[in-house]
Image (cartoon, rainbow, N blue to C red; front, side, top):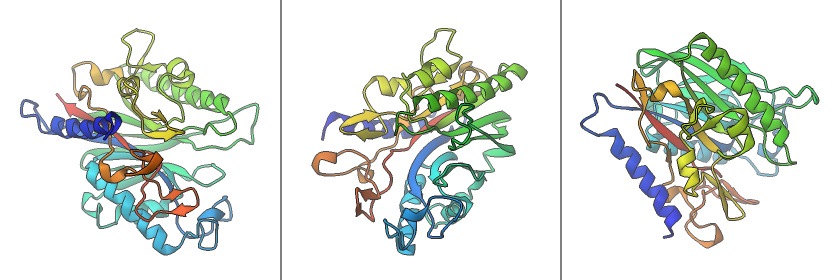
Length: 333
Protein backbone atom coordinates (compact mmCIF):
# COMPACT_ATOMS: atom_id res chain seq x y z
CA UNK A 1 0.00 0.00 0.00
CA UNK A 2 1.38 3.39 -0.87
CA UNK A 3 0.82 6.49 1.22
CA UNK A 4 -1.66 8.01 -1.21
CA UNK A 5 -4.04 5.08 -0.84
CA UNK A 6 -3.60 5.06 2.91
CA UNK A 7 -4.46 8.75 2.99
CA UNK A 8 -7.76 8.29 1.18
CA UNK A 9 -8.70 5.42 3.46
CA UNK A 10 -7.70 7.52 6.46
CA UNK A 11 -9.84 10.42 5.28
CA UNK A 12 -12.89 8.21 5.10
CA UNK A 13 -12.31 7.10 8.67
CA UNK A 14 -11.88 10.68 9.83
CA UNK A 15 -15.06 11.72 8.05
CA UNK A 16 -17.16 9.09 9.74
CA UNK A 17 -15.52 9.72 13.09
CA UNK A 18 -16.65 13.34 12.84
CA UNK A 19 -20.18 12.12 12.40
CA UNK A 20 -20.38 10.65 15.88
CA UNK A 21 -18.53 13.09 18.09
CA UNK A 22 -20.56 13.17 21.34
CA UNK A 23 -19.76 16.78 22.25
CA UNK A 24 -21.58 18.14 19.18
CA UNK A 25 -25.13 19.35 19.69
CA UNK A 26 -26.65 17.61 16.66
CA UNK A 27 -25.67 15.12 14.01
CA UNK A 28 -24.04 16.82 11.03
CA UNK A 29 -25.49 16.65 7.54
CA UNK A 30 -23.38 15.16 4.76
CA UNK A 31 -23.22 17.00 1.43
CA UNK A 32 -21.37 15.37 -1.44
CA UNK A 33 -20.54 15.45 -5.11
CA UNK A 34 -19.83 12.67 -7.61
CA UNK A 35 -18.93 12.68 -11.30
CA UNK A 36 -20.40 9.29 -12.17
CA UNK A 37 -18.80 9.09 -15.66
CA UNK A 38 -21.33 8.52 -18.38
CA UNK A 39 -24.52 7.36 -16.71
CA UNK A 40 -26.47 6.87 -19.95
CA UNK A 41 -29.64 4.93 -20.62
CA UNK A 42 -29.95 2.70 -23.71
CA UNK A 43 -32.37 4.91 -25.65
CA UNK A 44 -31.33 7.01 -28.63
CA UNK A 45 -31.79 10.74 -28.14
CA UNK A 46 -31.69 12.27 -31.64
CA UNK A 47 -30.93 15.70 -30.18
CA UNK A 48 -27.60 14.63 -28.63
CA UNK A 49 -24.46 12.70 -29.50
CA UNK A 50 -25.18 9.58 -27.45
CA UNK A 51 -24.38 6.99 -30.12
CA UNK A 52 -21.50 5.47 -28.14
CA UNK A 53 -23.93 4.51 -25.39
CA UNK A 54 -26.49 2.57 -27.40
CA UNK A 55 -26.83 -1.22 -27.68
CA UNK A 56 -25.33 -1.14 -31.18
CA UNK A 57 -22.87 1.64 -30.38
CA UNK A 58 -19.13 1.58 -29.74
CA UNK A 59 -19.59 0.64 -26.07
CA UNK A 60 -22.33 -1.93 -26.75
CA UNK A 61 -24.36 -0.24 -24.03
CA UNK A 62 -26.93 -2.94 -23.32
CA UNK A 63 -29.66 -2.95 -20.71
CA UNK A 64 -27.53 -5.33 -18.66
CA UNK A 65 -24.60 -2.88 -18.67
CA UNK A 66 -26.90 0.02 -17.80
CA UNK A 67 -28.31 -1.89 -14.82
CA UNK A 68 -24.78 -2.76 -13.66
CA UNK A 69 -23.90 0.93 -13.78
CA UNK A 70 -26.97 1.89 -11.74
CA UNK A 71 -26.13 -0.77 -9.15
CA UNK A 72 -22.52 0.36 -8.86
CA UNK A 73 -23.26 4.09 -8.58
CA UNK A 74 -26.05 3.53 -6.07
CA UNK A 75 -23.68 1.34 -4.03
CA UNK A 76 -21.24 4.25 -3.78
CA UNK A 77 -23.97 6.72 -2.78
CA UNK A 78 -25.26 4.32 -0.15
CA UNK A 79 -21.76 3.84 1.28
CA UNK A 80 -21.20 7.62 1.42
CA UNK A 81 -24.47 7.96 3.37
CA UNK A 82 -25.05 11.43 1.97
CA UNK A 83 -28.09 13.62 2.64
CA UNK A 84 -27.53 15.87 -0.38
CA UNK A 85 -25.39 14.97 -3.40
CA UNK A 86 -24.62 16.66 -6.69
CA UNK A 87 -24.03 14.46 -9.72
CA UNK A 88 -22.25 15.09 -13.02
CA UNK A 89 -22.32 13.17 -16.30
CA UNK A 90 -25.90 11.96 -16.06
CA UNK A 91 -27.77 11.80 -19.35
CA UNK A 92 -31.29 12.83 -18.36
CA UNK A 93 -33.99 12.71 -15.75
CA UNK A 94 -34.84 9.10 -16.58
CA UNK A 95 -31.48 7.80 -15.36
CA UNK A 96 -31.94 9.80 -12.14
CA UNK A 97 -35.39 8.32 -11.61
CA UNK A 98 -33.99 4.83 -12.18
CA UNK A 99 -31.12 5.58 -9.80
CA UNK A 100 -33.13 6.84 -6.83
CA UNK A 101 -35.44 3.79 -6.83
CA UNK A 102 -32.57 1.32 -6.95
CA UNK A 103 -32.79 -1.02 -3.93
CA UNK A 104 -29.38 0.17 -2.71
CA UNK A 105 -30.71 3.67 -1.96
CA UNK A 106 -34.50 3.53 -2.35
CA UNK A 107 -34.93 3.82 1.43
CA UNK A 108 -33.23 7.23 1.39
CA UNK A 109 -36.17 8.65 -0.60
CA UNK A 110 -34.04 11.09 -2.57
CA UNK A 111 -35.81 13.78 -4.56
CA UNK A 112 -34.39 15.17 -7.82
CA UNK A 113 -33.43 18.66 -8.96
CA UNK A 114 -32.51 18.69 -12.64
CA UNK A 115 -32.71 20.57 -15.95
CA UNK A 116 -32.03 19.29 -19.45
CA UNK A 117 -28.88 21.13 -20.48
CA UNK A 118 -27.26 22.17 -23.73
CA UNK A 119 -24.19 19.94 -23.74
CA UNK A 120 -23.69 18.32 -27.14
CA UNK A 121 -23.23 14.87 -25.65
CA UNK A 122 -26.41 15.34 -23.66
CA UNK A 123 -24.82 15.06 -20.22
CA UNK A 124 -26.23 17.14 -17.37
CA UNK A 125 -25.66 17.86 -13.70
CA UNK A 126 -28.26 17.21 -11.04
CA UNK A 127 -28.89 17.25 -7.30
CA UNK A 128 -30.35 14.48 -5.17
CA UNK A 129 -31.58 15.46 -1.74
CA UNK A 130 -33.54 14.16 1.21
CA UNK A 131 -36.57 16.45 1.63
CA UNK A 132 -36.42 15.83 5.38
CA UNK A 133 -33.04 17.63 5.35
CA UNK A 134 -33.30 20.10 2.46
CA UNK A 135 -36.69 21.55 1.50
CA UNK A 136 -36.26 22.97 -1.98
CA UNK A 137 -37.90 26.31 -2.86
CA UNK A 138 -36.61 26.82 -6.39
CA UNK A 139 -34.46 25.23 -9.08
CA UNK A 140 -32.79 27.32 -11.78
CA UNK A 141 -29.99 26.91 -14.26
CA UNK A 142 -27.44 29.52 -15.22
CA UNK A 143 -26.17 29.42 -18.79
CA UNK A 144 -22.46 29.56 -19.52
CA UNK A 145 -22.21 31.65 -22.69
CA UNK A 146 -19.13 32.67 -24.64
CA UNK A 147 -20.05 35.87 -26.50
CA UNK A 148 -17.16 35.28 -28.89
CA UNK A 149 -18.41 31.78 -29.72
CA UNK A 150 -22.22 31.81 -29.34
CA UNK A 151 -22.59 28.24 -30.68
CA UNK A 152 -20.44 26.82 -27.88
CA UNK A 153 -22.52 24.54 -25.63
CA UNK A 154 -21.64 23.11 -22.26
CA UNK A 155 -23.27 22.07 -19.01
CA UNK A 156 -25.22 24.82 -17.26
CA UNK A 157 -24.80 25.61 -13.57
CA UNK A 158 -27.66 24.11 -11.57
CA UNK A 159 -28.74 26.51 -8.81
CA UNK A 160 -30.97 25.09 -6.08
CA UNK A 161 -32.36 27.12 -3.19
CA UNK A 162 -34.09 25.71 -0.15
CA UNK A 163 -34.55 25.53 3.61
CA UNK A 164 -31.69 23.83 5.43
CA UNK A 165 -31.20 23.66 9.21
CA UNK A 166 -33.65 26.53 9.71
CA UNK A 167 -32.05 28.89 7.19
CA UNK A 168 -31.88 29.39 3.44
CA UNK A 169 -29.18 27.45 1.61
CA UNK A 170 -28.08 27.94 -1.99
CA UNK A 171 -26.44 24.96 -3.73
CA UNK A 172 -24.66 25.35 -7.07
CA UNK A 173 -23.77 22.18 -9.00
CA UNK A 174 -21.11 22.55 -11.70
CA UNK A 175 -19.37 20.61 -14.44
CA UNK A 176 -17.09 23.08 -16.19
CA UNK A 177 -15.76 22.64 -19.73
CA UNK A 178 -13.13 19.95 -20.11
CA UNK A 179 -9.43 20.42 -20.72
CA UNK A 180 -9.58 18.77 -24.14
CA UNK A 181 -8.57 21.21 -26.86
CA UNK A 182 -7.10 23.67 -24.35
CA UNK A 183 -10.38 25.23 -23.25
CA UNK A 184 -9.09 27.27 -20.32
CA UNK A 185 -10.95 30.34 -21.60
CA UNK A 186 -14.23 28.45 -21.34
CA UNK A 187 -13.56 27.55 -17.70
CA UNK A 188 -12.74 31.18 -16.97
CA UNK A 189 -16.14 32.12 -18.38
CA UNK A 190 -17.77 29.42 -16.24
CA UNK A 191 -16.00 30.77 -13.15
CA UNK A 192 -17.07 34.31 -13.98
CA UNK A 193 -20.69 33.20 -14.48
CA UNK A 194 -20.67 31.46 -11.12
CA UNK A 195 -18.99 34.42 -9.41
CA UNK A 196 -21.69 36.77 -10.72
CA UNK A 197 -24.38 34.41 -9.40
CA UNK A 198 -22.71 34.31 -5.97
CA UNK A 199 -22.37 38.10 -5.88
CA UNK A 200 -26.04 38.56 -6.74
CA UNK A 201 -26.96 36.50 -3.66
CA UNK A 202 -24.43 38.16 -1.35
CA UNK A 203 -25.58 41.64 -2.37
CA UNK A 204 -28.99 40.82 -0.92
CA UNK A 205 -27.61 39.15 2.20
CA UNK A 206 -23.88 39.08 2.95
CA UNK A 207 -24.50 36.22 5.40
CA UNK A 208 -26.12 33.94 2.82
CA UNK A 209 -25.22 30.26 3.08
CA UNK A 210 -23.86 28.94 -0.23
CA UNK A 211 -22.37 25.57 -1.13
CA UNK A 212 -20.66 25.26 -4.50
CA UNK A 213 -19.77 21.79 -5.72
CA UNK A 214 -18.65 20.20 -8.92
CA UNK A 215 -16.10 18.87 -11.34
CA UNK A 216 -14.38 22.13 -12.24
CA UNK A 217 -11.83 20.50 -14.58
CA UNK A 218 -9.31 22.70 -12.79
CA UNK A 219 -7.43 22.35 -9.52
CA UNK A 220 -7.90 24.68 -6.53
CA UNK A 221 -4.80 26.67 -7.46
CA UNK A 222 -5.78 27.33 -11.09
CA UNK A 223 -6.74 30.78 -12.31
CA UNK A 224 -10.43 29.96 -12.79
CA UNK A 225 -10.87 28.99 -9.13
CA UNK A 226 -8.31 31.18 -7.39
CA UNK A 227 -8.50 34.45 -9.31
CA UNK A 228 -11.90 34.50 -11.05
CA UNK A 229 -14.12 32.65 -8.56
CA UNK A 230 -11.94 33.95 -5.71
CA UNK A 231 -12.09 30.75 -3.69
CA UNK A 232 -9.27 29.70 -1.38
CA UNK A 233 -8.48 28.27 2.04
CA UNK A 234 -6.48 31.47 2.65
CA UNK A 235 -7.67 33.91 5.31
CA UNK A 236 -6.81 36.88 3.11
CA UNK A 237 -9.85 39.15 2.77
CA UNK A 238 -9.66 39.16 -1.02
CA UNK A 239 -10.85 35.54 -1.00
CA UNK A 240 -14.59 35.69 -0.32
CA UNK A 241 -15.28 31.97 -0.73
CA UNK A 242 -13.66 29.18 1.28
CA UNK A 243 -12.37 26.20 -0.68
CA UNK A 244 -12.69 23.24 1.67
CA UNK A 245 -10.84 21.10 -0.89
CA UNK A 246 -7.62 23.09 -1.01
CA UNK A 247 -5.86 21.68 2.08
CA UNK A 248 -6.25 18.18 0.64
CA UNK A 249 -4.91 19.36 -2.72
CA UNK A 250 -1.90 21.00 -1.07
CA UNK A 251 -0.98 17.64 0.44
CA UNK A 252 -0.82 16.16 -3.05
CA UNK A 253 -4.02 14.14 -3.15
CA UNK A 254 -6.77 14.12 -5.73
CA UNK A 255 -9.97 12.64 -7.09
CA UNK A 256 -8.68 11.50 -10.49
CA UNK A 257 -5.36 10.76 -12.11
CA UNK A 258 -3.98 11.24 -15.61
CA UNK A 259 -0.62 9.83 -16.67
CA UNK A 260 0.13 9.13 -13.02
CA UNK A 261 -0.54 12.73 -11.91
CA UNK A 262 -3.34 13.37 -9.45
CA UNK A 263 -5.79 16.24 -9.86
CA UNK A 264 -8.45 17.47 -7.47
CA UNK A 265 -11.04 18.69 -9.96
CA UNK A 266 -13.95 17.67 -7.71
CA UNK A 267 -14.28 20.43 -5.18
CA UNK A 268 -16.66 21.78 -2.55
CA UNK A 269 -16.53 25.51 -1.84
CA UNK A 270 -18.54 27.37 0.79
CA UNK A 271 -19.48 30.93 1.67
CA UNK A 272 -17.74 32.44 4.69
CA UNK A 273 -21.05 32.45 6.60
CA UNK A 274 -20.63 28.71 7.03
CA UNK A 275 -17.54 29.38 9.14
CA UNK A 276 -18.67 32.37 11.21
CA UNK A 277 -19.69 30.41 14.33
CA UNK A 278 -23.41 31.11 13.90
CA UNK A 279 -26.13 28.76 12.66
CA UNK A 280 -25.05 26.15 10.12
CA UNK A 281 -21.31 25.52 10.27
CA UNK A 282 -18.84 23.63 8.14
CA UNK A 283 -17.33 20.87 10.27
CA UNK A 284 -13.64 21.74 10.23
CA UNK A 285 -11.46 19.53 8.02
CA UNK A 286 -14.41 17.32 7.09
CA UNK A 287 -13.74 17.54 3.34
CA UNK A 288 -13.18 13.93 2.33
CA UNK A 289 -12.17 12.15 -0.83
CA UNK A 290 -14.24 8.97 -0.61
CA UNK A 291 -11.95 6.23 -1.91
CA UNK A 292 -12.41 2.86 -0.20
CA UNK A 293 -10.37 -0.05 -1.53
CA UNK A 294 -13.28 -1.54 -3.44
CA UNK A 295 -13.47 1.58 -5.64
CA UNK A 296 -9.76 1.45 -6.52
CA UNK A 297 -7.81 -0.46 -9.15
CA UNK A 298 -6.01 -3.16 -7.21
CA UNK A 299 -3.12 -4.07 -9.51
CA UNK A 300 -0.93 -2.85 -12.34
CA UNK A 301 0.10 0.66 -13.31
CA UNK A 302 -3.31 2.05 -12.33
CA UNK A 303 -3.24 0.63 -8.81
CA UNK A 304 -4.93 2.99 -6.35
CA UNK A 305 -6.70 4.97 -9.06
CA UNK A 306 -10.48 5.03 -9.57
CA UNK A 307 -11.88 1.81 -11.01
CA UNK A 308 -13.63 2.82 -14.23
CA UNK A 309 -16.52 1.26 -16.16
CA UNK A 310 -14.28 1.16 -19.24
CA UNK A 311 -10.50 0.72 -19.27
CA UNK A 312 -10.04 2.04 -22.77
CA UNK A 313 -12.21 -0.25 -24.91
CA UNK A 314 -12.40 -2.95 -22.22
CA UNK A 315 -15.68 -3.06 -20.28
CA UNK A 316 -15.43 -3.69 -16.54
CA UNK A 317 -18.79 -4.56 -14.95
CA UNK A 318 -17.33 -3.89 -11.50
CA UNK A 319 -16.22 -0.37 -12.40
CA UNK A 320 -17.64 2.85 -11.00
CA UNK A 321 -16.19 6.07 -12.43
CA UNK A 322 -12.94 7.76 -13.38
CA UNK A 323 -13.47 10.12 -10.42
CA UNK A 324 -13.65 9.53 -6.69
CA UNK A 325 -16.55 11.35 -5.01
CA UNK A 326 -16.11 13.94 -2.26
CA UNK A 327 -18.15 15.17 0.68
CA UNK A 328 -18.24 17.63 3.55
CA UNK A 329 -20.26 17.84 6.76
CA UNK A 330 -22.30 20.78 7.99
CA UNK A 331 -23.57 21.05 11.54
CA UNK A 332 -26.18 23.22 13.19
CA UNK A 333 -24.62 25.02 16.15
